[in-house]
Amino acid sequence: MANERASFGSKIGIIMASAGSAVGLGNIWRFPYLAGEDGGAAFILLYVICVLFLGIPVMVAEFLIGRRSKANTGQAYEVLAPGTQWKWVGLMGVLAAFLILGYYGVVAGWTLEYTVASVAGTFLGARDYTAYFNDFVSDPWWPVIYMFLFILMTHIIIVRGVKDGIERCSKVMMPMLFLILCVLVVCSLSLPGTAKGLTFLLKPDFSKITGKVVLDAMGQTFFSMSVGMGCMCTYASYFTKDANLMKTAGSVALINTCVAVLAGFVIFPAVFSVPGLSVDAGPGLLFVTLPNVFHLVFSGMPWLGYIFSLMFYVLLVLATLTSTISLHEVATAYLCERFKLGRTRAAWVVTGVCAALGVCCALSFGLLSDIRLWGMTLFTFSDFLTAKLMLPLGGMFIAIFTGWWLDRRVVREEVTNNGALDIPFFKFYVFLLKYVAPVSIAAIFIHELF
Ligand code: PHE
Image (cartoon, rainbow, N blue to C red; front, side, top):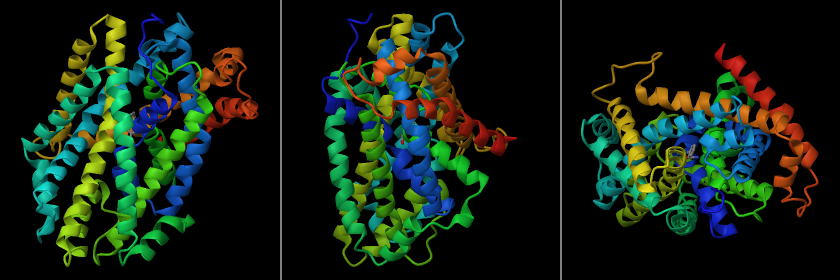
């Protein structure tokens, strides 16, 4: 199997694809609204701590499991630990991929609708944008249609394969995303609310830190870095032998955090520029608050508002697409290799299942809003189940597997590329995996959930 496996073509392709998976709605939609709800800078500080001590170590662990086993995440553990129960960690990852793509596809669909609306100039006039958002998400057809279109776009890239589909798209889309983001930051920092926006993002108020905020920050770390469910493991099975795993993880984490913070630099100055808008608007922040900003702040220069809104939603679509392909790939690679299906056929199965889940989540804002699980709608439940439970739990098991179970020689060989690289903090890395990650994840769980 090892010889016929697809692989990424270059180091830059590896970084772009992995960063593409990490950078997504998590950074631009989820991060700002959690920061808004959880007190801004204090949340960001906790998030950065989690990235350094949990996110990066677990990402490197996933990388080494994937590259060593040369298998998708659903089978990687069977290769490295045959006949053990560790395989369930990988299978839980595949399940998480289906579930996340199901509800993520819904928000992805919203970004597509908002892009179309931007092209049509919808966000220039005065209108009730809360009603616009609510009417749209509760409609029985449009959110479903856009969700389906988005998953189909993902599908088309996936069937083209690892190098021609995933790598090539990431290499085009990620630089575009940076460019757009930089232009937007410059525009946003010239708005009247800049000082207030930056204070909110950069000056921590420690009294805001509660157990919920810590759980949110940890969940956000795993979700935003795409770790804990085998996405990075599956991608790493396509890495070349000479890729430096530590450096790649460090670069991806840096890019991912920068994009989240820069997205905050775009969003909060804009929100604070309009009196009466609230930063803790929840999941609607991007879709309700920002259209108000476009229309109010740029009312004197409508063409600038037009460009700003269009660029913003295109940015969102690009970021989202590079993440949906990574989720799709986890499931497609598993079905392909486990059941020996052709790539196209496997991709259709994934597209079909995710679209079906997506329909349920999309309708949970309207027709199915009465269906509640533990008081949550299907959409909120999927987010809670995956981001706050499955990913941190997966991360904990991945750390335990790599730190305690896997032969230390294997870990060292992968991290140092068989001795070719000098990794001075290897012992510290193992310490983080063995103790810090599992204990802190378990502690946060126990504190918050029981
Ligand atoms: N990291 C992606 C984001 O920030 C979401 C994602 C989670 C993608 C898990 C793949 C796996 O939007």
